[in-house]
Length: 200
Image 1 (spheres, rainbow, N blue to C red):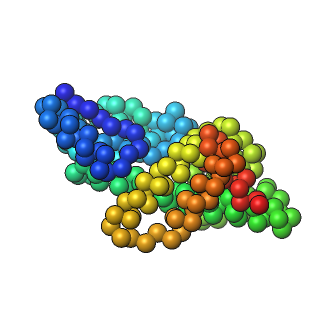
Image 2 (cartoon, rainbow, N blue to C red):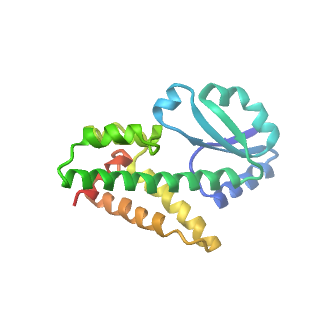
């Protein structure tokens, strides 16, 4: 018997689940998913796992069906920690992207001009390019990850940093911006709707 946890959770919760599963004689694997709906449809997700190694190998066919890479990272907690670190990085980058576009708009520079140069620069990544297109088209109802869930992951990442005493000034500010967006009734919109907050 095996249990694979694929929701975004904190390391302590993952360890608690492992303990309960193992008490019943089962195997436990945390499997954190990195990627978009488009990448999921194309089978290009990145899967971060930790826990029972034999269960990781037993799940290979499933991982290969949905992802381009599946990593086994060791003991329970490591995959959740890396996932939260990546979510913090994405949140900070998205906040910077939104503020940059808001500044361009205030300067009277067209989205298309900024996006043309951005796409040709070394700043471009699939994630940021996708969010830039959403911001340009203001298509915030096409949700890859909701603003609410993005902020939840950032909160969990900051909780992790607090427990080990690691300062996270930029991530803390970005998290506050995401939190403030929820007052604008943007919780269920795509995370890129943070742009609507940065315009004011």
